[in-house]
Length: 70
Image (cartoon, rainbow, N blue to C red; front, side, top):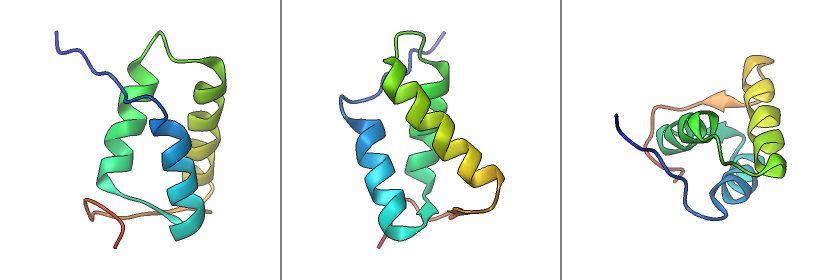
């Protein structure tokens, strides 16, 4: 089984980027996937990832196929 690990501070960096650009990139989506699958994720980071996912579902944040925000 492949192990996915987030870099320290990745969720907060992702939240800052998404709040600035209004969209989630492909790299952000991979980060969210890793966050969801990480059983050792801090509760604050888990809440932030959940908040971001809810924003996507509600249409407040666009989903982009770009690898990174330009």
